[in-house]
View (cartoon, rainbow, N blue to C red):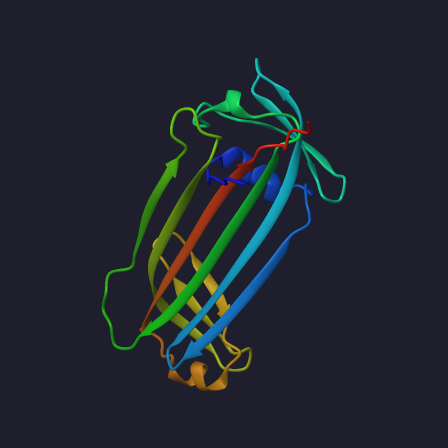
Length: 196
């Protein structure tokens, strides 16, 4: 069966936020002196139960029987290829890496990059979208009793727990921490199999 991947922002949000389907995931955690990372993949599936071509509303039913209605915006190419019974599959991967920059005086900053691709004309609606956010933050406080550090970024400050005592000991007020968050979302539509 041919599968395509798609960037459908509204569909992605609806499927993740609502109880449309069962979710399965994998979490990977790793660390090294001054570094920590985590990644997770979530898979969600739903079946198209209704399509309103005029409003571009699509009804989806999850594997648990929950239903949700979403609107496919104009960025969803080849809307007319969707059929009741098609399976919509979503795969979302998120990863976060934190790296201590001892003695750095790097400017507190944030950069955002977005890239994506969508189906070619005539294909099933499909595509992928990815986003990468990189933040350089300053350690402004360290609480040894609670084992937390306060990080000041360009937009706000957060208090971050550091459970590993060896990692906590490496951190000093004034150090920089570079956080890199990456997410990729792929949506594919598997056409319903026609019975003879």
